[in-house]
Length: 163
Length: 163
Image (cartoon, rainbow over all chains, first blue to last red; front, side, top):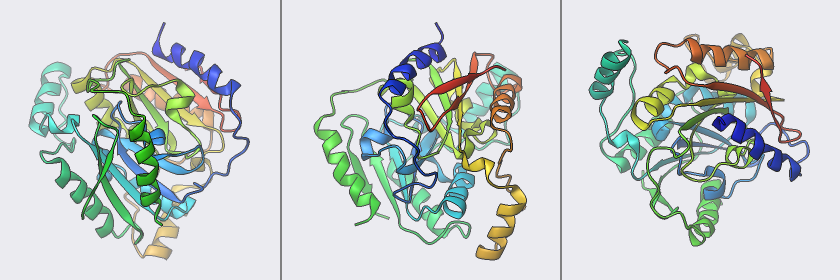
């Protein structure tokens, strides 16, 4: 059985208990979360979100430069007015460099990806600082509160990073 | 109180019941989900995910062209071998065009974003077909099972799209 088929079976359970009705399209709590795609982070549970509360943007590392299109749409068309950035301990982005991944892809897939920035980082806290500042300084992003956290995959705790 | 402060309070609850211990970095179920950032989709609950199971990549529309960096990292460095694409009913991406949003940003922010493709779509099912095919045809993406769904925000149900 593919994982997709397992998802269909699990979804039937979810549907059987679904009681949300027709929620509005704009997020009720007017916030966009930018978080890493890491499998260990259940953003809804970890931050106390309910269906309808918040935009949840996720990518490798939770990097904001790769989330800009979504942030602009979230603010300009759907009214969010706060941003929360979540990176985390034991992140895969700490384990490689652009050179390493580009060489692997050249060797394994025979493809040149020198034009892709994979956005790894060497310092976790600094990556949060960098991404919060990048949002604050981007003229395409509204002047709204931006808060950055490190999520500890070992404990489930979010720790605020001073920026 | 900012939403970020509300998240900190909710997170204290999550930490108090956290019982996952140290989970491995690579996703246990070897799958990457690409889904829309829409506030109404709780990807974990809707698909039956537990912490540690799957990469969850989310952006405006769940568009794969904007998820490519993350998919490559997921497959090349963290071993996922299946992809599930989830778009949804009542999506914001059905409500605008690039021209509309570019003009709004020019008017409101005095910024030119003609270089940004915001990736809206006019046909929901077709957007899933397009994105599943884009993954299957991309030489940077491994030849793995790719399944596409429409999530119904009204019912919580995922409906498979034949591609």
